[in-house]
Image (cartoon, rainbow, N blue to C red):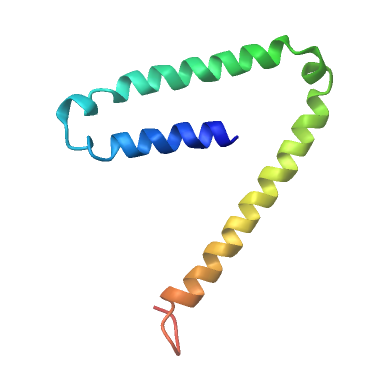
Length: 93
């Protein structure tokens, strides 16, 4: 995990000074293709893993619970931030 975060941080440090270069902006289609390729390879590796395929129902159930609780937590946090920082005193905006 530390390796991936370090690689991303190095990319940010290199990309920040180059953000105004027009040649760098042409990389966006390449990034799209690479992300699609990575997603395809991830799906391929999941399809080849017999343990994951045999327990797909269990993993899908866990994923549904985790994503639902994440959405609920995000909604509650955004409501709290709205009420604390954006709602006027003595009434609504």
